[in-house]
Image (cartoon, rainbow, N blue to C red):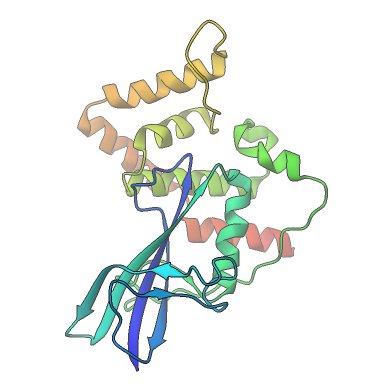
Length: 230
């Protein structure tokens, strides 16, 4: 049997760039043969939605020291409301994936969190626009995840101008065309993005360093799940 360590990059656009790192999950897969870059892997134990399409293997590498294969794959989700992303991540964790990359699982294995299913209690419409509301009108668990997402985007250099605007305004503003009918909120959003690009590199890095006070994605999910179980 051959061990394949597979990294799954979940990319949610917007606010993330499809070319950035994304939220990284990882797991080990046992194969009865040597994998090739043209191979696709499928199975309900990996994903319940892709079916026979499966995962393609990118950047397939053989580590001669550890005698394991490394590879990455990705799933891009467009226009998914931010309030649904934590449940999406938890559904992957329930299948045995772990937050993190194969590059760090050897030193510090992650522990899977218990997760509960998102209940359909009639709040679908509210959750769809939750990321556009002021933080005072959102629950603490979502605000923690929002901050964690800002931190992850900045640390992975994924749409840093959008992350900066999210951090400054405390919300993700829907796209509008500039013009006389543009809302004042979207104008502030564009100004915040422009402000990031006008900052010096030292100022940009100083802002990124300030985000270390925000929780990680893993910590934000643990907080959310703990509050749901209480």
